[in-house]
Length: 317
Image 1 (cartoon, rainbow, N blue to C red):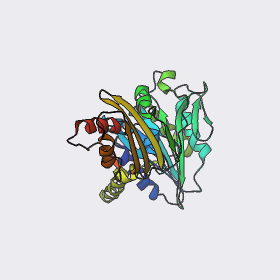
Image 2 (image 1 turned 135 degrees about the vertical axis):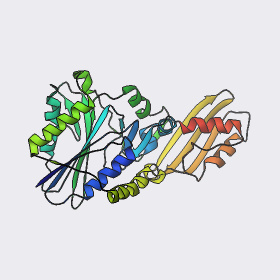
Image 3 (image 1 turned 90 degrees about the vertical axis):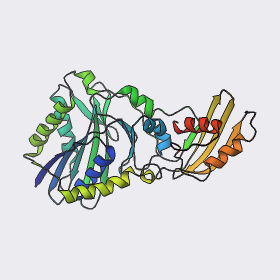
């Protein structure tokens, strides 16, 4: 039996998820890996979730953030460098969820924080606050558990990007379960990311024995880059979104606009626009601009000031 440890020095979610996949693909019978990583200003959605339903992706990316889609199920999460992600990747005979969670619980206990596993995939404090969400996947040679640890996450950003707009929406994807959350630093001001990393390493060794650090070879980095390109692509992040129908409404200085969209794989299949604007051709011009194209409006610019105003608004919803 062999135990391994790897820590990413990147804050890019697409690179970190690509690295996770590569490390998991290398797991052999008898192997167990603990992988620690952090993402900067990121919303990560589940494999089968609709990006439009789960977050304000346009606003997030306009403000320099990242939208990422993982290969596991579950709900959307906001992550910044106040969050620490962990992954256990193991051959099937080494995978033991109870022992893996014990590693996390022991690390938290070093800071005087008692925790427990709750519901389908959460870890909570003894006060009942969620601080960790987990997701899982299985291949023929490897089983994966990965999760988040909210240590000092910017909650304002969490609410800003994860809270949907007030438009009507019905989606055929999975909707995230919004729970009461807390940062562990709120329970113990001594909690830091670096301190938690060291606590997890100690708990991992205490539970499983000595481990070996991993260094990536140049050919492995090239392989990770290929997966990175997939995970960074528009098609992976947006095109995998389930079909949904949505309605946006907004009043501008020159009138009100109501936009009805039907999206499939994040392409606009149907579009109907209503408006009380005196410009009677405005709805048809907007419909022609949006219909049968990817719902990616960041770089759409026209010579029509009103259309540009509407597109700017829609891109941030």
